[in-house]
Amino acid sequence: MKKWFGLGIALVLAAMTGCGKAEGGTVSTDGSTSMANVIGALGEAFEENNEDVTFTYNPTGSGSGITAVAEGRCDIGLSSRSLKEEEKAQGLTETILALDGIAIIVNMDNPVKELDLETIAGIYTGEITNWQEVGGEDLEIVLIGREAGSGTRDGFESITGTEDSCQYRQELTSTGDVITTVLGNPAAIGYASLAAVDEAVKVVSVNGIMPTEETVKDGSYAVQRPFVLVTRKDEELSPTAKKFFDYITSPEAREIISAAGAVPVN
Amino acid sequence: METAMKNKKCSMDRDGFIRKRQLIGKKRLVENIIHGIFLMLGLVTVGCVLLITVFLVISGIPAVRRIGLIPFLFGKEWASTAAQPRYGILPFILTSIYGTAGAIFIGVPVGFMTAVYLAKIAPLKIKTLMEAAVSLLSGIPSVVYGLVGMKVLVPGIRIAFHIPDGASLLAAMIVLAVMILPSIIKVSLTALDAVPKEYEDASLALGATAVETYFRISVPAAKSGIAAAVVLGVGRAIGEAMAIMMVAGNAPNMPELFQSVRFLTTAVASEMSYAADGSLQKQALFSIALVLFFFIMLINAILNHFLKHSEEN
Image: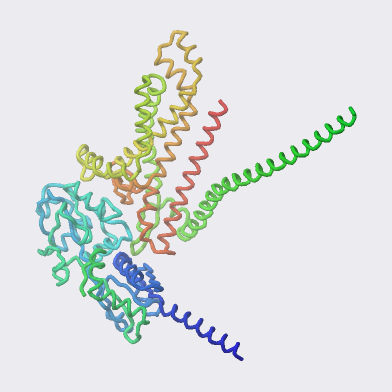
């Protein structure tokens, strides 16, 4: 009798420790490939602060991420665009995590100081081919972009409405390479995440507004998009997911978000 | 008395013989174990090759099946992330072939002449110095070649040829040519050094000049070694990714000398990091790697042929 009792206690204890581990739990995120840097850094920091927690991120694209969260296949969906009305009607709600500002850069010797969004689209689709047409010198415009699948390219093309129609001269695999190339060619134009741009190249204003953290935040700078966390309205997040959600939307996470190249909003 | 002693000696001999046999047996066992270890280590290498081959074939086949072999190999357009994706890798295949041919066209004459100079003409001091420089050149990481190419060569080509942008097939050819120089020089040098001195002496004795002797006697005698050097250079050039990714521009255009181009290697390297797992894009990248693998196998087969030929000589 006593033996059975002892065994029972042991079993209960074992079950409890098992539960404890399960409570450490997992947070699953799914969606935008552009948010890889930001969410990856946040997930890493969260895992470091909370032992036993597993963070997963599945880079499938904004649309797939929204579908995944709507179908309950992940805790938090990641989208690099605002939700559409019909998506909100499915019982989804959005929380803006950060803003992604993309700077348009040209060579220091280029006299062009400002462009508007249509002109930029015209330049990248090959309708405008000479700097003379936009107030510069008589030089053929050299279009520098990022490789297919890059979040910055995806962001730039979706904001300017030039998806699949950019006539790139060079497709480079890092922001650093884009800056180096623009630095070395007086006829080049490129785009890069705002946080990565340094003083070696000239940032042009878009529709008369220079990109800074402030103009991105107040929405006046046009080449930007939100990084959105998508959750289900009628369903509570699991305790671990809730903890993660609260952490990344808290002021604590600001620095990590800035370091990952986006403008934090909380 | 004598018989007893003889008997004793005999038994001692037998003991010694048994002991010796035991010792030999032990030695043989150790020997066998060591052979076994060496065999295992050798099998690790073979296993790696098999693993990579099987992996590439398994992961490269699905996309080819979905896209179709002909549209994949001979399609002229690559737009993997477009709304209607197109997966034609002819531009990459042609670029890799043209780029490698260009590198050989520039690199082989320079490398070959350098090898002749070092093997036959150069004074010992200069030879030592130049050989050290060649070794150093082969040790420079490819990303450094790319960086120098990007900062110096690309702007240089833009200014020299008055084109809007210097990142082009030509830039990649030049970078590759420099990168294959060390292997061409070293292998040709070994082949030229191995030519028996008697051949050259005989030629000189018959009244040929030194230069006539080098080109009429030494070079023909070393020709299969030199051919192996060229094939080795081809192998190195076709497999290089990092350096040319930084100078070739990477736009998936059909190859032209002053056009921005994408090689087989850079096509895989540049899109791999962002391609979603299980997507057709990622599978297609593996298929490109498989095509590249076939090219390299082919080159290896040719190289082996030349090496065998030179051994027979």
